[in-house]
Amino acid sequence: MFEQVGRSECEASMRAGSSRDIGWIVAIGSCLKTWRERRAVRRRLREDLARLDERMLRDIGVSRRELLEVAYRPFWCP
Image 1 (cartoon, rainbow, N blue to C red):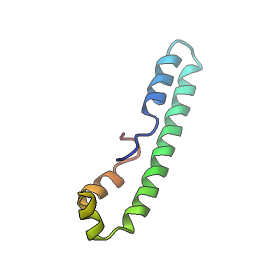
Image 2: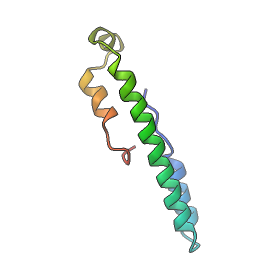
Image 3: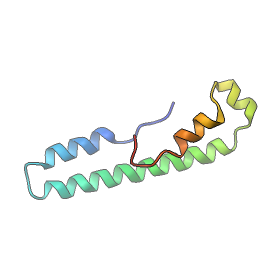
């Protein structure tokens, strides 16, 4: 239901960059990009969730608390 953004790209960049001095800069840049994308996805999720009423949440079988836990998860967590 919820999209996981870029975790494999971030990890792959870190592994690939470990053999070169400049690689760690690329890896950090990739991780920052991943975090920014996650933050944007979760911001849109929070905005969408704010529009759902309790009946709609029951229809999809999710409580407001469960949705808010995902929406407010720190951007660095997958």
